Length: 482
Image (cartoon, rainbow, N blue to C red):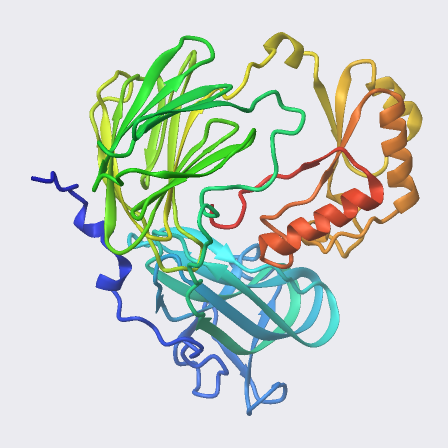
């Protein structure tokens, strides 16, 4: 008899809670402000509809800002709540006309959870001071797995003057298709580069496989539906046991080289990367239930929305369920049971085709802590002169240049597309750093990038790396919804 994975009712698939919204239909009530002020309110102020200025129809909404407002730093007009589905791509757009003498306007979409707490504000473009004709501000975003509803926001921040808005739309987009070639879902591009880690051996024993990397050893028994993960650096110990239901059965090796080994059956694909990351990708109809038991505990532990980390002084293990952004898929999970500070804790996940579970054992390679204390970092804006770099080189190994190296209207050069404000100066700094034995990192952020797709960001990063030859990238913020 199979032991069913018990799942919290409130985390069942979002389709239970919502009738699916139509694709391409505007979900904003009265987004053109033709029906009076229905569906909108302005923070502490009466709404102003302007019939003298409109992009289409007879009306627009005007926000008049200044220090006299009670909430001068964050003033807004807000539309009605729109039910949201988790992990769905939405597209928003609004036409904006500017007449500010100070501050800025930021049309946004607020994502809210079931408790009414803000998950985040989506949007990139801003309207800066100056007389500006109608401009379309648009973008896409993917809701988180906690999404409950959306709110259209027309925001002014520390602004003086007027801004007009018209034709606000939010539209649900088609689902991201799930279409991966065999082995593709559990394989990642690139390799370890200069990092000393790799896939050391793959041994088969009947239907079982033992995969050894620099930092981890995975014993895979797909016929029994059992996987054991073992730490190899520091204390050599078993750290996690996974039970798969249904058992995937005998698996075929699709690929085995110095960077990855992949295996496949009709029910599951497995990939083990050179850094010891184990990736599980269920196949076919139905769901696979994956049960985890901790064989170690750790004083630093966290469990949040199915994501797990257990770490002690010597290393640890983490697990991360994932679904393609915009696919509508939401991994279900079992709440953590037990005390993560000691062995014996348990949790579990129910995954469908298209979802992944990544499990990593760390450290993935030896690390010279003493050497790391000598690798100091200097973080600066602009283009520092050579004498400053020469002084820094006595104590630091890394230099990072922040967003002010990029051209663009302040305060948003960080959103890209990135164009060097002074290309020759950037080349000078890179050459000087190389002469002095330092590495140069530049600021670019996928979190804020103007084109909200990782492909566009990576393409421009590669082009700039080819053009200038900087040694690495620095950014703050988290990539999109991950």
